[in-house]
Length: 565
Image (cartoon, rainbow, N blue to C red):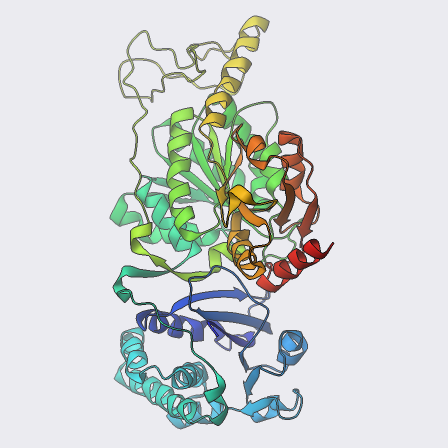
């Protein structure tokens, strides 16, 4: 078996995320491929939260329903996770929790007792981390090396108590009689230092810094707030101005103001916040002001499920803002892709003077995995500003519709901006012919945006595939893994990381193949758009709108049904 799934369940406040934070860097250092994701209830205390760690022979970027090892820390574990366990699952829990599970399926794991022996009940998560390392036969010294710097500020006594708790759990795990049944996936042969352990927000944040972003404005809203806090932490090191606005309207307007002054501006929000930004997006279209907007999707409408995941905002960003103007929309599916896409987004915003939107979601932002350092490619940061003179016209007509962009104070020219319709100099006008030419000018840049648009990434033997399984955003990993399990059955994956505008060559690429679209929303928003844009009928839509990501098993079973149908 080259896939071991370990799930930790517990109420908010029991530290299930702390366990994974301890284990992931140690597993990475031990040359394992790891992937981790969380599902959290929207509450500070109580409820039932889970984190999953997958240890895999091959790098993965997807969630599985199957559980090999389950640490059940709350009475709700069986109710919530019983459907994901089977006769091969080993459940570890305190004695009082084992009564919730079928006889013989639960092993009493004395985490509380060991924590108290070490000095405090709060060390239960450290005990659990030690148990896992003991089961996997990973040296306890690696956990001790992790714990010391983590708790050094709290004093040597706290460090020693944590190490004692970890050691007690480790010895118990090593001697656990049922653990010999687990086949630990093989380790990769690369130097662990060549791998980076990161979450999606970090990948997006590093890409944003690399793109030259020097201004961010946001009103906090999960799951996008992590990008704001990441850049705030890096602000002094990289000269980034951080504005925590009073609301989302102020945030988008601050971003536009900064961009008007020459900054490379970013705004980050979620669906409900983006709703409020639509007038600002139209202002960017009218004034031809570049801005990058990151939208971390979560289920709606309204507050919806604020800590869960969905891909329900495609139609929102496609049609946001009144009037006709150009834009670009991206939806990366891997951390490497996210790092590259955010750089591309800034370059396109600057070159074409349009708003660019990056769609992510809770699942992608909060997932953690190992990334090859060499796969993160730095793209050139272009400069698109011009020094103005007395003859400068901000909205001069050009062949491609893109006027030379100046900023106030850089040169001797006057740089005007107005939300009303305007002439070449930026002066308000109600002349119908000028209006016609300005609308045409603003839309003309869509031509080059289309021809420069990214083509979908193809997997498997795409040239000979009779069926394309299409994904966008975070579904890339689950579709690719499901297709591997599906085998050579005439199906290939087509992942769209740019979802608007589409390259004209997409229609011929899809050809006469059978088309299946996988997306996390209730209606198939991207599938609708593909049909409209390419004229090709989508033969099947695999949809999910529960607030959960797709599991590998779900997509695989759907593909099996499709082949038998």
